[in-house]
Amino acid sequence: MAKRVAIVGAGVSGLASIKCCLEEGLEPTCFERSNDLGGLWRFTEHVEEGRASLYKSVVSNSCKEMSCYSDFPFPEDYPNYVPNSQFLEYLKMYANQFNLLKYIQFKVFLSTTGGAWVMSRISTRGLPWDMVFMTRFQNMFRNSLPTPIVNWWMARNINSWFNHAHFGLMPEDRTQLKEPVINDELPGRIITGKVLIKPSIKEVKENSVIFKCTSEEQPIDIIVFATGYTFAFPFLDEAAVKVEDGQASLYKYIFPAHLEKPTLAVIGLIKPLGSMIPTGETQARWAVRVLKGVNKLPPQSVMIEEVNARKENRPNGFGLCYCKALQSDYITYIDDLLTYINAKPNLLSLLLTDPRLALTVFFGPCTPYQFRLTGPGKWKGARNAILTQWDRTFNTTKTRTVQESPFPFASLLTIFLVLLAAIFLVFL
Picture (cartoon, rainbow, N blue to C red):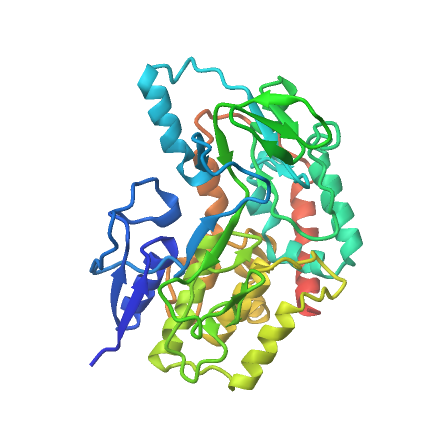
């Protein structure tokens, strides 16, 4: 008889978890408190009373309940504030009420305590930023350099778009990694005066706010909270998953380290510097095989030691500093999980049997196709998908054919780079 699995939440992590359960022959039942699927990726109203819903091909959204928090004084009876997750619906309602969506002019104050790096979706030569940044070569290169050099290098690249100091956005703490803001419009809004960058809020009054470093009151109609989230597991006994200082005692961010048997897994409670969707799916692939009994967890003492070491947040001095709670290196973390299920790409083996694929995997974008080259869940179309991913990327933008001038030394340069990459891979 197939094992039955309860999945709490039908967000993206939950959907991936259901899929993985079905792939391994388990029987998932999903419990979703809202009246729709998608979790944070959709805007819907919640049903008033939570109820269980059974879906044949859906699963959990990381088994967590998030609540907005704020660290400045705020009147309890202030009428016009909304959390950022509900702002879009609020804006639609407000605009539709006056039928003025196209004409409403907002004066926006953006309050930030410590600043942030703002990045464009478009990288050098018009390439998608994440496809350029998230490669195995780039990741290995970053992790081999001292942290101060990596921070300087990244700051230099990010500032090449616009000088953050001139726009009031320069981060105060540049030693620890803080998730960058991916937004192509913000610099233009700031330079045209439509968005005004302000320090943190000192005080909120009935119809105005006072920012720090000034006594001037600014009239405000709506306050949108974008201050972050805390997480909790109100539907579980505290002994099952205990949350302290923004962290839970989870082995590999998934399994409660103190439980005698691996009967509970948390999917999606992590902040990788990369896409959350393939991260959650990879977590689910391993977790489902553990629940099924195919893969085994290490002794409890080993798991607790790993959890405690992570909570100490001791940087090793190389690469980016992942010192905040739940932060993780995307490629390194996923490779770690793939190793447990024998699905991590073997670059040396690929270099001997399929050098073209090996070089593309190493130097090209680390897309989830790589996680399906081998092991359970292997997909026969993964190789072709990897080799043609740039073609698909630009098929959406090349709506007009342009004759490009050939580079006379392109062939020689390509041969040189291939030889250099081959030598590099051999000595990994």
